[in-house]
Image (cartoon, rainbow, N blue to C red; front, side):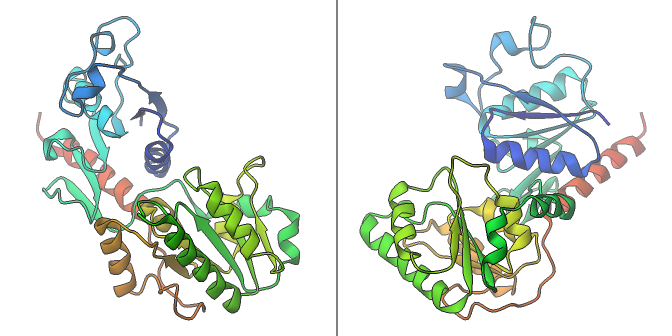
Length: 319
């Protein structure tokens, strides 16, 4: 199976596409495309730039065309449609997240439940796709920092995005976050922390001070991020609720997951976290931080299986 991945290079879009492609059992050809101005101003509605159109020398849309093309990001919507047309309709097209132009954007569209798009070719799940597998986590754990071994159990893995994002009063939001840290300190043996590119340094400075004297380990951005090792090694996981991706990845492990609700949270993410708690997949962070059981959630495999069904159904059509 020949697979293309189309993104504009955003890491969140890339990892979701790569995760789905990996479940199809093939190494994809990754195409990072930057439309440039003024073309990107019109996207997802606008056309593909002249230099990128099929038949133009150097175009990223050139034969041999793939069996499956997976795209994410609004700038890639016209490209995905162009691939479909240039292949004579033979390429099975997949778009991850709402393309903003309706269900005709691709043969299969995946959206998180908090998006409104619904149609026969739209697959809806609570959590999102990711590149994690049991094998990948086990390999990362084998390379974990040696300092983790001396940390007392239970070990809480802390995945931090931006807990003060969107807050009008960042001081109040930061104080709320630090109060949540105090709760964790009282309930676990140690804390292992990794942050994202979105995490403000003010948050990390305050966190380091708050964890002073408590058994902990905080990732330094100068080193390789042990994100996957943390997911596989820690006994429980805490995730700031501002990241749909991080919560989804945490739930794929089967480890107890305790989302931290930030001071300010957009309604879509708030609804997402509420559904997870209501179905028993997560537990509130401000409650007891204790082990519990649930079936790991794997939207990535669900999407991959839908692609395979779509390909099979297409092959069965006459002509």
